[in-house]
Image (cartoon, rainbow, N blue to C red; front, side, top):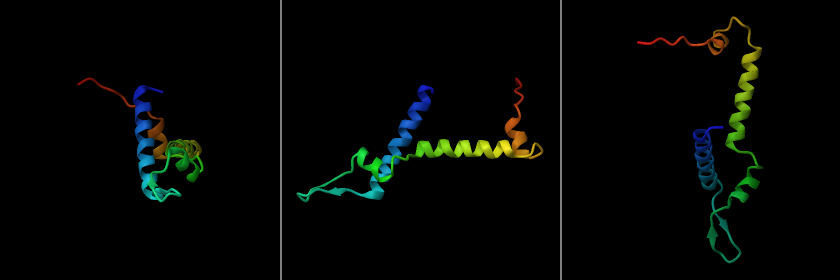
Length: 88
């Protein structure tokens, strides 16, 4: 995995946490003080599933769908094609 891919994944996970904190809201402690949920609490709430795993699963699902397609389908032909690069 390249450094750029790691950076993108980290940004995506940070965004996911931000959205989850907004959805689930803060936690009220016994002393009446409100605080934001920790990453561990968010993990428990979403049962340790995250957007990165979802994207990977969807990509794998699409690959299987594409693999089963008949050869004559345009989508399969485009995915299997190799673009011809020309110098201008």
